[in-house]
Image (cartoon, rainbow over all chains, first blue to last red; front, side, top):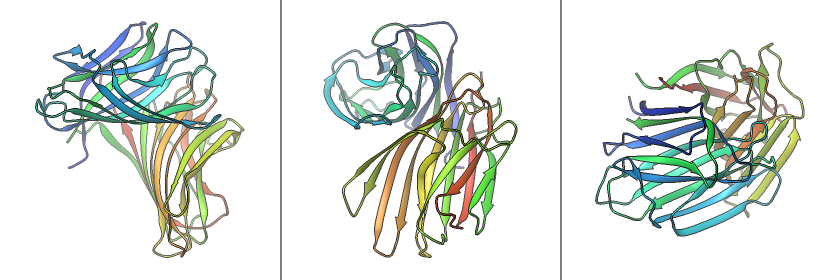
Length: 169
Length: 174
């Protein structure tokens, strides 16, 4: 039946860690990542995402992304960035329930002759704490096979969260 | 077996609200809803409130919400609510027989007694004979750490549309 999700990899953070990497993309299917209750050790920080090749995050300045920030307390932010090495797709905070939650789709990761794309939706509280989260998309402008995705903060650690990679079949 | 597990299917006809109870549990942290609203009796916004473990609808001023109305007939509009008593504007019902509203929504951590409940969603709706189309993207939070077990969907103006609601859980196997 179309639309099934098959779990490929998962990581639950219970001890602070600098990053979380989910690998296991090995087919041309669309993949989905679900993240819930991810918190940071530093109050004011950016939550970033990179793609991995052979399990290693690609740190080159080849990420283009566009996002808008839904915000319950301020005018919505609209941002487009080219040639980033550290794409920011969320915020951190250490107060009560200051956390990020994501639904992410990954496209063409296994295809070595195409760029790798993703769409993302998120919801969470920033360090204010205000309800603010980004929606948008990103591309890695290198024709190479990618096998996963890495989450990390601009400073400090990931204190908690469940990160799960699914294949959409 | 798919890790997207169907938990509940609920249909209602000519109903001003729908309660879906006992759908959240420790088995899942993330839930997906697909909702179709049709055959409304007036132009109405669809809203939602959580239902707590006692079975009571939570209508305290603990909900924040932000959404973008993307309109075919006028400029886009940013909509914000803080400390309101429900998740507003999930989609719209309408009087016209061929109009309707639909949305896909995710809830995060509703059953947790240590985290707020977060939501995100997007909707598609057509309303009135003036050929008005609107899509919405939105996020929300209910700022209590009470364990929730269900959802109450309702309308601003007590219209009575038909509903088809499916609830899924995103299973994580350790």
